[in-house]
Image (cartoon, rainbow, N blue to C red; front, side, top):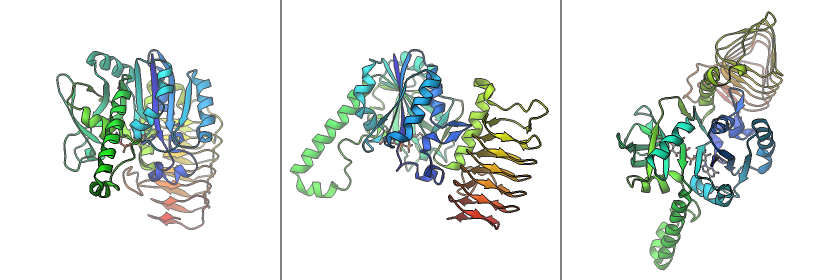
Length: 409
Ligand code: GDD
């Protein structure tokens, strides 16, 4: 039996995702028309003997309640949200719900970060993990040497795939192989986390005895029940024949900013060609708009037949796209209205926003730059014939003149 756990974090986490995380918890932000967290959930569904998916986070219960019950019914696998009262770290959060997770007596626990975009090769990883026979297996990918320091860098044995060395976001270069935030563990992981708690308590007691040192380290010490999977578990267990790696050659991205979410939306749309072609708009039929490349259109959205859409466009529920509109590389959220002959390129258009006739909302499309894509927050109104370029617009603004390279507060 296998239990999957997806770490969704909480409201203090998604700050770089503003203004899009002001309305919806980041894990529920749609990529390729489906909530971010749904992509790993769908990937878990094909694991043999999967009995339960838990989402662990410190968002309010009600923010996930509707989603979790809808998706459980739709996918016919039990998905449940478990709320932490406060952040306990990625391993501490897992440990907190040990009793729930162990209720199904799983032989393996699949642990996933919610904010990664991947093809999640979980069945193959599970097979590899069983062959290695260790406590855990990490999904690993090769990235550019310049970007590696944003991640956990690691060294693995090229023959046995054993994890030999692990450093979280090091200052000096260690390796261009990085931790993807996707793991398979045996239930012994809980013993390893318990070991860190015990060690912490012992150190805290020692310090109490030595009051000078206590003063010095009081600000540095982490709470006893806060355990990070990377620094506190992976680093010390490396090179002890307990952890192994599984390298993917497929796509992988970390989703920390709205710019990257546009790139990830494209990756998931491209994946639909193989996994769910029925989700891609075909453009067949005389009444349909012209479709170019990978496009998702929610069945409730209304798109005028003279509009031209794609590539990399996803249009959410109840959006209305007028005559002659051109959309390229964008995410159009629920209840948006785009009027005649407007153009949207490399942008995210927030819930209930409207874009006037002949207006342009666009950006250069540098996904890594701060203003590389244009973002309109919730209920922004761009009036007719207004041009918005490389800008971020906070919710509820009305733009009657044009802007470029600005954050409009
Ligand atoms: N429930 C819960 N509680 N979730 C948490 C907590 C917590 O206290 N802290 C973090 N998370 C979740 C985040 O939402 C995210 O999905 C995941 O755990 C990891 O978050 P961080 O611990 O903030 O690490 P990171 O995202 O900067 O880096 C980690 O992931 C990278 C891959 O995306 C590290 O493991 C890196 O080594 C790795 O490369």
